[in-house]
Length: 231
Image 1 (cartoon, one colour):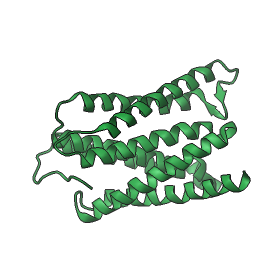
Image 2 (spheres, helix red, strand yellow):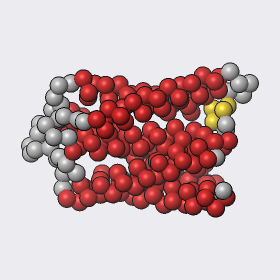
Image 3 (cartoon, one colour):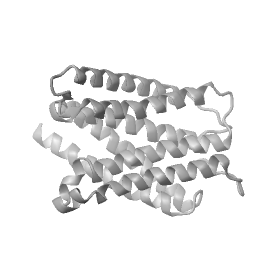
Image 4 (cartoon, helix red, strand yellow):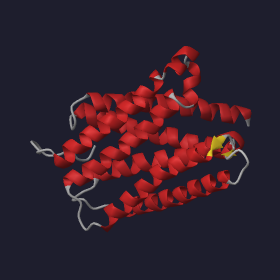
């Protein structure tokens, strides 16, 4: 079991590191260009794998990494639905999107239940994580589920809204990966003086600010060329 956990952990960290690097590249290069599309493909694959392995690790080591299961499922559903939205033809989505939406709903309910149960404990901590941590992830998952419903209930989805949905899902997936690397478990590799300085929170803040910038530009800006499709 120790060897299995070690292998999963190493693969989880390696794929998560690749996801963070590729996510940074997708922000840096011209949107819709081949470099953006290729980096986005690698990010999706790496982030999906890292999330899957994180979820598996959360199940195997549930005594200490239980919340990692929910975070992994959330990251996986976000990037895969984001990828499906980018590839959607004429704004139409198929059965895989519906299945992922159902998984996200179940994950949201599981996070809410874990948070509520944590509140009943004397220290309000469930398996090493506070109730607020579960509710924070539940909030993200809940927003994703509401957007899943909004996308599915629309008869057609315009390019602007389709790419906006793609963008925020990928950015939040990137946010989760960066958080794990810089302010989560990965922060342990940095010297204490760096951890205490607050500088490790900057990547997450930068991702959110850039996400808001591009969302505003896509939804309210004047389109000068066709929006990218099928990465």
